[in-house]
Image (tube, rainbow, N blue to C red; front, side):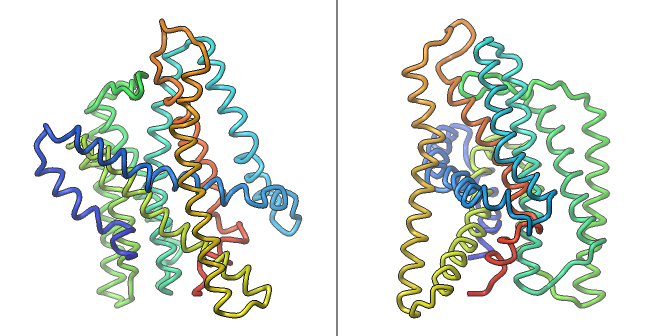
Length: 352
């Protein structure tokens, strides 16, 4: 399950996509739309459920480092206020160009988040399997993920040019082809260094490696190169990313519920049934919140808020809510899964 959820499905999906005729794009879009409601949107909702649970206790807990508490407060309070004001002001000004650049920022942060998550999945697996990386090896893995994403982002901007999401144009940054070549060469060198490090770890030093984590790392970084060649893949990449996230979040939440019940001294049979029921409620609430945030709320705004038709199509509310959730999710995850978070080690790496 770890192998397929963390990235194994990619090895099945990508070859199939290259075999599909171009006329199949509407069908692929419909399938990805359905999967988004089941997998992608709940993954965003789960991050809010975890992040804001006991929020003020974490911000005020002097037992946690001051820097971490500050990061928590910034991501939980300041970022949504600033982001919300930015979107509202530019909506009222009917500034479609600035909102379009916000779409580009969302695309950049989404991809950055995806590759960093791939690295995070590798580290989680290495800890769970007790197959650790040294600090220098971790730095190389992070460097390679960042370099490869920058190269992919430049390539996507160069090849795709202008795109349209819910009637708003974005990905408008013109990229000189020289930057694409230079970034590609740097990414190739960093990939070679990373592959050499893993090979030495496995064959020269004969150390065990977390294969499922390596798969998650590799597919999270390099699938964007395939997406540049076949843009239709962008429709399904978020679902593959969300599968990774759900695997970790569900493990985290199950362990949270189990430890909470164990601390109350309940019997094993009660412990198992109650934990699964609470976990099921958590998952169901995530599905509901995902639907509300991505569809119900923007559709409600579309029907009840009057706006100038000259600048925007009716999809502007979908565009703004999607930007808000995606960008805020990046800041939430950047805090939620840090080592300084006392809940991370307590519930993520336990072996219940």
